[in-house]
Image 1 (cartoon, rainbow, N blue to C red):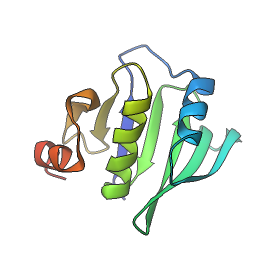
Image 2: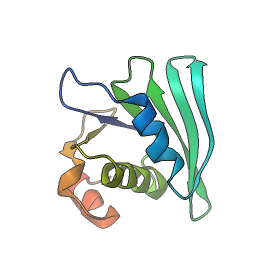
Image 3: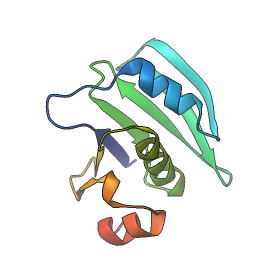
Image 4: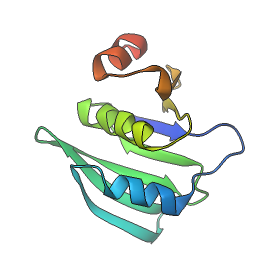
Length: 116
């Protein structure tokens, strides 16, 4: 299954408390857990229009991984970018694209730019 990878500038890490606070404010987020999971320190589900995805933060707090490339995955990426005060970058696991989320305002714009 394809995944989306959200990250900051090189050598930067997420502020875990800030990200947890912002993610918990997103309508559609459920089962938010922070702890020591296999390869992750944060995990939640995000649902949109009957479809859902899993979001995880890596143990080193350098990346957020979103399962799949459906509307729900892209919508979550757009929402977390709107909530955080710094630019986020997004790529797929196959390295087909690498974009700065701040440059996009809609699902349609991202689909057009990335062809996913």
